[in-house]
Image 1 (cartoon, rainbow, N blue to C red):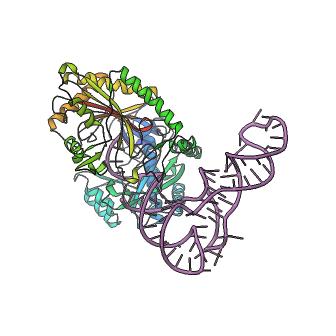
Image 2: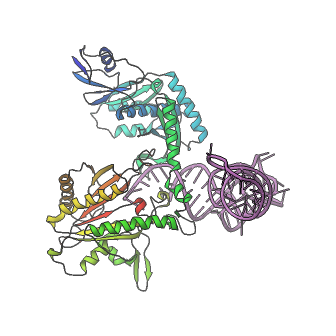
Image 3: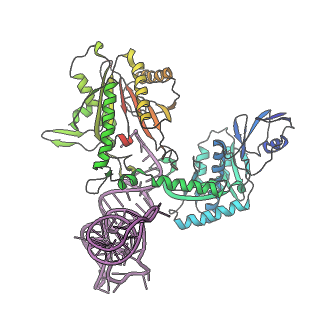
Length: 515
RNA sequence: GCUGGCGUAGCUCAAUCGGCAGAGCAGCGGUUUUGUAAACCGCAGGUUGGAGGUUCAAUUCCUCUCGCCAGCUCCA
């Protein structure tokens, strides 16, 4: 059997050898820095058996896959510590994150900071004990029996959700056994610096109807110096937090008397905003947009027609009664732009028509989600609606993308992740129209050569969208949250306007748009 | 909305067991006259988020309420 080391030698070995011994045979020193290996493209334990010719890449902490294995084993160590300190805690899930890991436990009470100290001390002890981490495979039936006997009801539920024929793997270290796909470090002693960070409640399977679990976050690094550098970075991020800076520089405030998520722009903040808005107006005019204004409220009937009452009510403030009809505070600008379009009979020769507005909208957000300027109840959207013929869609979308990248680039955002968000569960319009609109967006992306990923079900109720996620200096490394990105979206809708009226909306959030 | 943690001077934070609300910075008035991160002396600054309760006495204990923070969920 032939084993090749990437960028290294090639060796004949006997079948049945482990990945680790194959690496040794190839002359690699198996120190604590070698965490796992990629075998023919699949990440595997060093202890797994080689069954066929393979190309092997040793994984260290400097690779994404290596870090994932490292953090995943770290969270198992934490889970083992929790079980040793609090035997009645039940295991649920515990994945690796970009900068650390978490594990959710079912426990009769929340963990306190004192608990964390005990758990962390125990975890360090487990690291010192350097338990070998062993993989075992069993049938679904045996796996259910195993975890039932251990009183791990959540694990049993997880296993029952797996396919019947599937082999199920469990990993053990000392007396601790967990259902896990793996792979893992060879021993618990492979983890260097280890620290628990904080606790939080989290619903089982992310559903608020389910019981709340106790989540513990932590992180780990090969050396104390790396851990310290990471903690220093967290401090630095805290120091640069826009809420802190906004207060210190006297840019903005929120006040109890005004209400949560409603921003007051102080003179200095307003000056910054004015400069950005002037830039926005100039650029839109230069790029063929016409600027419009629309009111903050409108008759509820308009929002019924637009579909917002049916599909967006959860995010709308309650309607208010005026004279004999009901009025609604606007959560979006789109219906107004469509009404402007509709105010005349239009010829196909007039198209495309591009309306742009810095439109202030109000959305009801649950109190728990409000966050500085990034998540508020009143904010101003950089919003536009483009009316065009079907044959113009691709070039219009493509221009919107260019325009978006240009604006973002002006503010120094040059790293993007592009997502194509498809039809959500609650949506208006036929499957066929959704498919048409989605493929139009897709071909614009392809035509422009933009790399993108599909984000299934993440479209808006009236159309699919292209999301452009950007990272800024502070958030790129923001711990434990993957979705804290600012986002811009281009939505294509053929669904609301009656005639052949695809409409692309461009909007932004964040510093250009809140309040 | 849910779980947990918080709310004391403009800011950052103290206040032991329920026993006269305090410090640093900022501010103001002086002194000094240039100090390389923030020179020295003094003054002022408070309905302890709000309402109710227990108590001789509440920043402290209880109830309700408002807001903030870390998450969950949703999303921009």
